[in-house]
Length: 137
Length: 394
Image: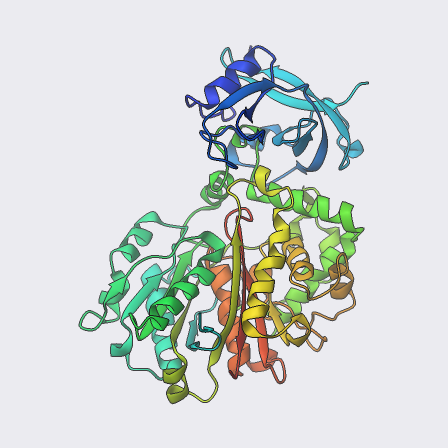
């Protein structure tokens, strides 16, 4: 693939689990086995009960657009060459929120509460970004 | 616990014009506003025993030097000052430094506190660097930055969802800019003093939908300062101090992804705490100095602190009620969208403006008979929610 020039995620011992999952087209999130809290972004301890008994679960990859914006100008420097692009907050069916890009979509058709599904986009050998597209069914 | 209502007061304020001033150095600004605040208070500088500089954005060296008591030396406070330390919580540094000053004074650890902010976002860093700065701060490097998120995108997020939830029109949002320009036209320290109609705002190009170019704030150089002391000392210094009647806050999150849930609702309990301490309600407020950054921030917070009904803030602005002569003047310095965005100074500027209105020193834009002024501040990407109430009598 062409050389990818946009910022890549910071890989830590914690985020590596998530990004390794994405490379295998699995969208992971955490679940606290002590209190049942659904956790994302991944944390070192449960933000409700401070428990360390966290497990990784696989999301079905479906949710709704909570809100979004299509950036035409004023993008971060690295993204100036890829405008316009859509950034969105997605409310996942499992009960957490994540940020991503909406792709494979006419930007004029975007709206809040639109159902979307994950579309894995490999950008380097190591990193596959979980993006979202309008749900197909 | 005994109430702290009205036990402290802002007795002096200082500000330099906000704008593009390449020849005006960081410390020149800081000294000018500190001097102005001391002279405005009529206090001897040897009474200032604590200095709280507020974190700057433009230059990390200036910032580090403020940590290291630069202002104590420049203002010649070294014989009497007991402490200098920086307060940094982004746009809410104003509220947190005021609370810190109150605590020091109420416990007797300090007699008078100088809070000072200076920043050169207009000329102290180039535009590319400015955009880069606001593209990485207060964001998750693991889960947000790879998608091209920015503070501008945050403004798009908020406006998009707010319009969806409330049916507020784009024109109503544009009327916030129109209103702030009307205030800025009356503010000699404002950068953007020419009037701008809602139609002109709507005609400007889309930047990050639904935010248009003329809905954006303007980065600028600026500085402001204020002095806090006890109510007893305030009464000796002036017959019209700005008493701190109430403060309330909530601090909720780091990232926008977390905050985009219902965290903005926290404006309400923050305001409720401030009203309860002050012993008044939203109907008593004469002027509201609401922290802006972008038009929707004002609309969301205005509703949640109880100054108008849910979904009604846009209409309130469009009908002119927040403008000069309106029934509830809002952000009378013009805010970051018209006075100019000086980093954390945007929050200091509205707090200073609230004190200025209470002290009756707002010149052409003075709101008549101000008894109570409400001010707000928020840091990061909406990480915290601060509400303060100043009044001219206890």
